[in-house]
Image (cartoon, rainbow, N blue to C red):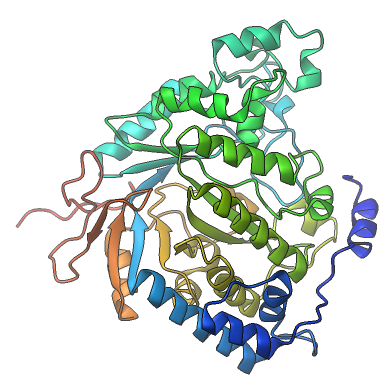
Length: 457
């Protein structure tokens, strides 16, 4: 359903709407008491009451206060962050998600195509060089989320099966020979990024689906193969909204809700910790958002392997949803604050809620640390996905930046590992601030390549 008129009609005909028989006061009382919330409770808190239109500013502050109190009870006052690098392998992707401006049509990367699309594909060797450089500078994690390049296969055996398929293009496969640059295989890329014990955080449910296409292999087996190659954890992105009537509008060619959940369960069955996300503020409503939270909470009840939840506010400016007139903007400041807060209150089995300086900028992201969030993302060093959608809050954050911002609100900055198992409080009084949890980290300030390290006295 990529036709804009069809998509608009589908939005008008959503089955799930934000109406409840609950009251805001009852829902807030349950939240304050720490009782498990229902979907109706969550809708009341996200809307600040379905008995009136718009977000009530007084009620909103009451929800934020309840979430901030819960955050203090669950994780205390530390604000965590990770020293990491984003190393996205390719922008080549034919999935056609209407919320995304990261991808480029895979045909634009073919040998005979003009080289003017502005996208990229990295070879495994190029990925390794990027990670080696970042590891030397002190990072402890490399995060990699990429487009679904048709030449990508899980490993050499998978490539042979795809090459032998009676209709390879039916399973979105083309030989690497068709393209100017081959991404190699997923196993090649994971091995390349596994530098000196750095934590490799990669392979979304959508990528896992791509890595098993044309076969009947289980998600668990796919993730076990990747874990053996060096994968340490999996990002629960590609979730968007885990309600299929929304997915049918914004990403009709993407895996559905049950497939996403199956992939996440497969990753955890393979022994990998995972994260979970929501991408909100587009065509969905508050009922969809809370249904999504419920599905994530149920998944955590079954598995216990989700280390953090990451609300991602939709950046609209350069996306097809905006260009086709299906949205006229993203979430408001109040909606962003409430999404963080209700995530904290609803997800009673997930300790860590992340906020995003990339999505929100400094001032607003600091405010969300008082709305229930306790994690402040990572240094990134490079960020492509939000930037290509129109985000303009930068691609890099130094440890000194974290110290300045977090101490300004009276909280303690703590460098963490990806899985939250290792934590190092950062001393604001130190002369310099740099990472210490990475395999080569020694406290040297982490620079983004555009800064110059201070000379010795």
